[in-house]
Length: 93
Image 1: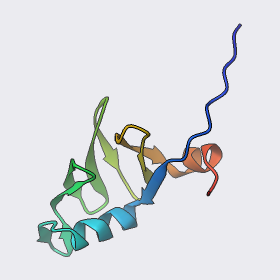
Image 2: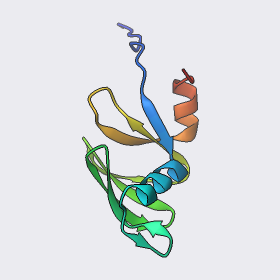
Image 3: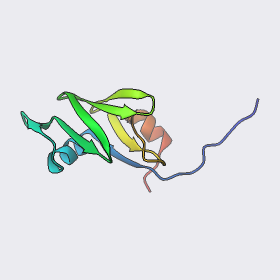
């Protein structure tokens, strides 16, 4: 069976806390100390609850929690990734 190796690419990724800080610093509507809705890299981010944001991805809306990293892909797309999978897949540059 054919096998493939992932091409080396450099991506940008932030934690849940980084996303909250970004929303607070960049015009997010603050409700009870949390940014309710804001844009991140041109994508609308919505507050589901204090432990979850709704992230628009190419595959539909996904949840981002404190157990996720938010990745910006090579074409500007964003998507959450579980921290353990992220750490198994990516190394710091």
